[in-house]
Image 1 (cartoon, chains in turn purple, yellow):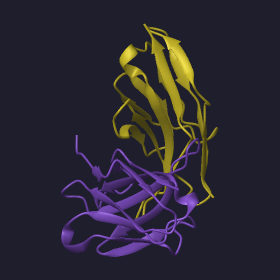
Image 2 (cartoon, one colour; image 1 turned 45 degrees about the vertical axis):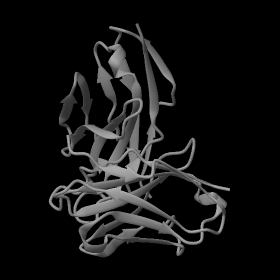
Image 3 (cartoon, one colour; image 1 turned 30 degrees about the vertical axis):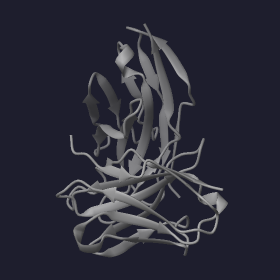
Length: 114
Length: 115
C-alpha cells in the first residue's frame, strides 16, 4: 500500500535546542497530520495541514511547534525550543482531500529530549 | 472531547482460537463518527485494518470483523481463528469526518498469538 516515510527514526536532543522532524507523505495526498504518542499513552492529534496552512490544531500544539511543507518537499514539524515533555514518538500521516480520515501513517520518529 | 476505550493488553491467544478486542467510544464533536481499526505489526508503521462509516454496518479485512453499534457505542474487533501472523498492536479509532478530519485513538491492545 501507499507508504509514508519519516526521517529520522530516532533523535536525541538537549532541552532548549531546536529539532525538525521530516515526513515524506504519499505522493498524491494533500492533507497532512502530526500525532504525538507519549510512552504508555494513546496517540493524540497535534495538527492538520492543507494548502500551506494549518487547518486545525489541538491544545498539545504549543507555540513552540510549527509545521510547513516548503515547495512540496518534506512536511516538517519543528520544535523550538524543545522541552523535556516533548519526548515522545511523533507520527506523520497523510490523506486524500476527499477521504480525509482514511489516513496513512509513517513509522514514527522517536524523540528524546534530555 | 471525543474518546476511545479498548481492551487493555497484553492479550495472549493460542493459534486457531477466537479473539475479541473490545472498543467503546464517546463522540461529542460529531453525531456519527467514522470508526476504524488500525494495526501495527512488529517493526512496521500503523496501517488501516478496516473502516466503517455507517451505523449498523460491518467491516471486514484479513478475517477480522467489526460492527458499528451506535446503541452501545461499540466497535469490537473479532476474529474466529487467529494466526501467529496476527500478533501486533491493534488500535481502535474514531474519525471526525468531513473537512479538517482528525482521528482519536484508543491506547492500543497488544496481541500475542502462541503457536
